[in-house]
Image 1: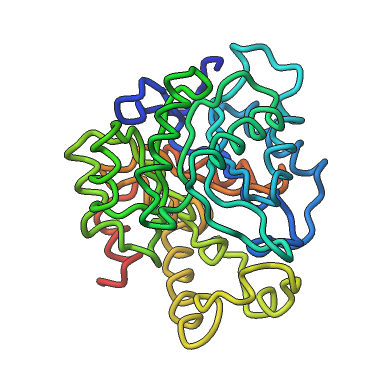
Image 2: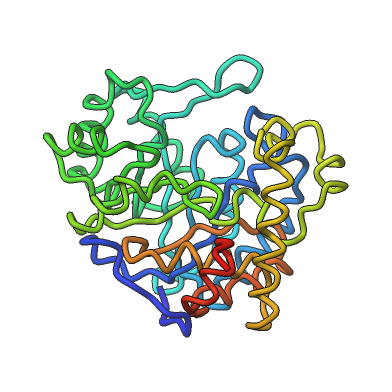
Length: 321
């Protein structure tokens, strides 16, 4: 990838020098599946990806499950024609396959993982995946078989690095019996802080790379999510069934957004950028996955990469003063 004006950091021991903010491609998988985000314009998605790359973002995180191939296809289209030194790092995931009614089925069997990798490479239009991740550690008894398949793909050169998402520390230890876990991807935001207890400290001690997802809590902390907007979400947007977007939790979360807004005003930025910067300040966190669906969403949120929050900011955000 070309040199970038954005700040970068090494992703664990992978040797990948990544920008602190990466392009999250979950939402661009669109609607019509179990965890879809409603209708999405593919041309907007491609324009958003290219705009983020122009601004220096040097990695994209997607998954075969996002729209059951649609997200990877869009990423592949956005990367068409780029030279190797212009192409961002491409991270994707396996273990969620399409079931009846476009629902998600978990599968960590070797043959399924190998088929998924081949299909992802074809959709993305690349020779090797820079970081391949187990999407979910389900079914739990099959973790070892799935992880061995990932190690096999790395040995074959079809993927450069391997990691996991949504794993506990105990599951990480099991996987590492057969091959090192190079990265972890937990959910982490002001609303979802479970990773702070064990996973993030473990990863920091072991020098495992960490990229966190949903630092804005799937849009709740952007400052643009109102009760009216939530009520108008399309039926095939998975967030309509998420208790975080419903009472009694919603009022608490909207109050948090107002605290983010007050800090954002002091820094001349947006609540979403402050929420991302809060996640990035954890010393274990190397990068944050930020979802963009339209090019206009990119510029304000990239401010998070270089936004420095002081202790007064943190106390205000967390409601301690």
